[in-house]
Image (cartoon, rainbow, N blue to C red; front, top):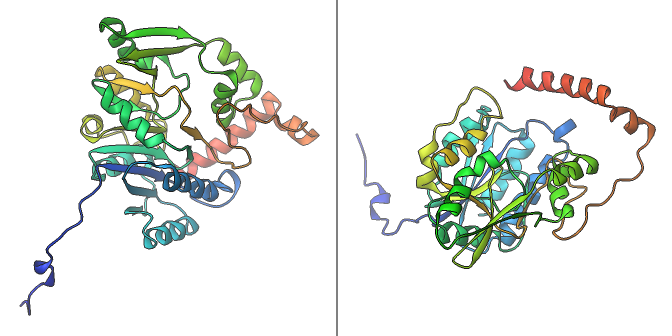
Length: 317
């Protein structure tokens, strides 16, 4: 039998969520090898969100079964009022499974999503929302211009070609330095980045005075929650790789996929020793020693990465 009256009945005010939820997905299973610097990467990612987000927002972090060091950092940040919503999963649900939960749980009308290795520059959030609200039927806005697979933004190009007053341009508008910064953050050499740069082009469109680059990607994006929910749920049968479903489904549904022409976010990956600043050339690596030269031999690299991939799958598939 209940005794007394629940004091919650006398609460006259409840907090309402901000219109924008910035949502970050984190996974740091251990603090060695590939993940040796990733806690510092996470701290940098969240630090740039706290420092460089120029619109009111709530921060949601979904942790996908990380080690205790990462959990301790996140819970401390929440205790300090820096994280409004913290979801700690004991299970690694894969990226698709995590998206199913966190994107559904995000309370904001607009979701600004990021992997845990994104560096944000000042103005990233307001610019993303501006493009989202300015263009019709936008699916997602990624805060950095780079060259994505043209098949993933064919609906954007079709809309530009069929809409009166829209100007469509093709060419090499992105500098090689800024293009290479993204490619090299994912492990490409400068030579490979140069080859990809020469073999591809930028597609830009201008609508009612605003110019954007066609394309977007799943590593960082801003979109209306109501639109994103149309494409849930995502497959949960693998730890990764299934997230391209969002790119494909959104394009097939005819939504625009856009990027600003200025760099407002950068992929860090798993190391902090170099973070590219827009309009600055990437730092060239020091001459490689014998060990590094051996490890970079195609056959050696393929064998070692194959072994690494098998070990990763044994633990996380």
